[in-house]
Picture 1 (cartoon, rainbow, N blue to C red):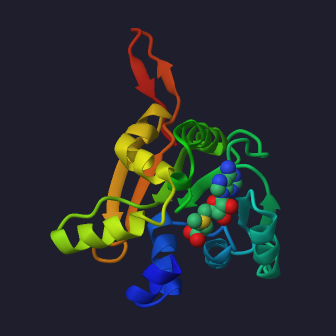
Picture 2: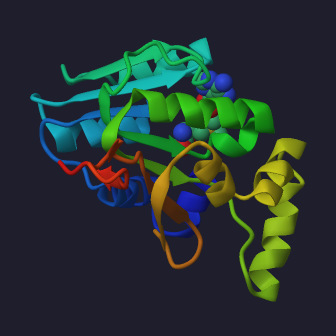
Picture 3: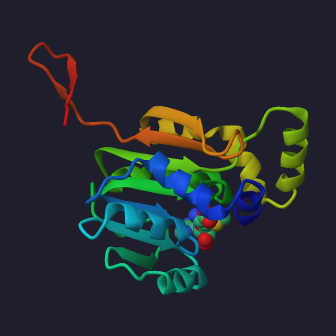
Amino acid sequence: MRLLGRAVGGEHQVRRDMVEQAGLSPGERVLDVGCGTGTLAVLMAQKVGTSGEIVGIDLSPRMIERARRKALLPQLKFYQQSIEAINFPDGYFDAVTATYVLHEMPRAARCNTLREIRRVLKPGGRLLVVDIYRPGGKFRYAVFRLLMLLENPTAWDFLDHGLLNELGEAGFENFRQSFIVDDLVPATLAVNPLPVQKAGDGTDVQQHD
Ligand SMILES: C[S@@+](CC[C@H](N)C(=O)[O-])C[C@H]1O[C@@H](n2cnc3c(N)ncnc32)[C@H](O)[C@@H]1O
C-alpha cells in the first residue's frame, strides 16, 4: 500500500479517496476489517464525527497495538479479532471496509468473512472492497506479475474466483466498480440487500428504507 501510495502521490491521498468511495455520513457506524495499523479507520473517524463509531479489527496483536496509538478520537476503537467470526451483533454497522485483506485469505476463509460482514451489516448497508486485480495493458500487466511474486498463492485464488462472484455467493447485490487512482486501485461497492417480503398475490416485494 505504501509503495503504491508513493507511486501515485501519497498513501494518505489514496486513503482519503477510499473514504470518499465509502460515502460515509456523520453518525454512521463503520467497521474496517483487517484494519492493519488503522490509517484508514482514523480518516473515517474524522468523517463520521463523535456521533458515529469506527471499529477496526485485525488478527495481529502487533497491528492492533500500533493502531491503538492512533486512536485519539473517542469514536474510534480497535480490537484484536478474527474477521471470520466478528464479535458484533447482527445488523450493527452501516458500512464495512475491507482493504487489501481478502486476497491474503484462502477461499473458505474469504467466503466465511464475506458472510460475517453481511451479518453485521444493516439491511441496505454497504461494503467497500479495495484489493488487487489483474490490470490491462502490457506494461501494467508485467508489473503486476512481478508484484504477484511477493504474494501468497491465495492471491491467485482470489483473482481466479473473482470478487464479484464471491460477493454474489455471500448474498451481496448492486455492485459498483470504480477506480481510485487512474486504473491502479479498484474499489468495489456492494450492498446488503433489504429483506424481501411476500405480497398478497405471492410475488416478492423488496422493502424500502
Ligand atoms: C495487507 S494488510 C492490509 C491492512 C490494511 N487494511 C491496509 O489497507 O493497509 C492485511 C491485514 O489483514 C489482517 N488479517 C488477515 N487475516 C485476518 C483474519 N482472519 N482476521 C483478522 N485480520 C486478518 C492482517 O493481520 C493484516 O493486518
